[in-house]
Amino acid sequence: MRDILSDLEAGKQLSDPDPVRRAQIQMKTHLPKRFYKAVSVASTDDGFAVHLDGKPVRTPGKALLVLPTEKAAALVADEFAAQGETIDPVTMPVLRLVNTAIDGVASDPQAVLEDILRFASSDLLCYRADTPQGLVDRQNEHWDPIIDWARNELGARFHLAEGVIHVEQPRESIAVLGIHLAQRANPLRLASIHVMTSLTGSALLALAVDFGELDGDAAWTAGHVDEDWQAEHWGHDAEAVVRRAHRKRDMMAAVGLLEALKA
Image 1 (cartoon, one colour):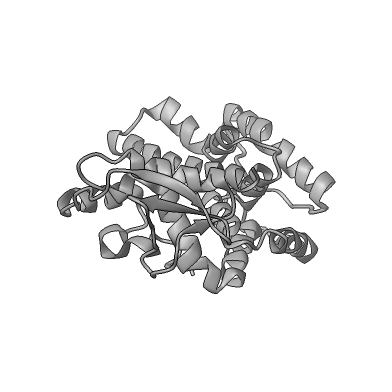
Image 2 (cartoon, rainbow, N blue to C red; image 1 turned 90 degrees about the vertical axis):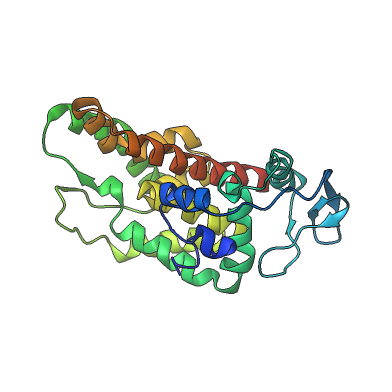
């Protein structure tokens, strides 16, 4: 299922799950010229469709690209409108996510839900450093409130461990998360949660965003506490900085789509 979620909608030219590698592949790929002038959002019986010169957009799987809210459709329309002389799918993360949800996730939402639960069973927030104290304190600052929120609001208790030795999480807690995810089985919403989960390494952070407990920037920061600590003490790698920027763009696209679906 993770293969389906790795740019299924863009075919070979965007098949690599690494966002930097995708960009490198894309630079070597001939980009199609922009073939439309006007971009609009039109109301339909099923929701809101994106039109290019009055014609509806379809997914690579030939399904009509229809979203349940006008705000969500506007996100995709804005990406089309922002294209220059050529169309660069790398710069259209919401479109890629929507295409994946419609052509991939909709066919088997349960598999995506289960993949999110696999992340939860080894959630980033449960694995803590024992030293240095500065990193320990930072992890506690960003992660403890979400662990407490999951216990108090979701009814899911998680065990913490120091280091990377796997700690078994209570089956009841994973089941509780499964119930909450089942209530969010809309393919677009589930795809957005999966993207946030995979980019942060934490299903709890993704659910906290979906529930409104965290905003996207706070979840991103929490998911990169260790990485930021290392960069502050050992310096920034240029390629890693570029990779991070692409990943954050994908993250914020998922957050934006989630918010738009609730509008």
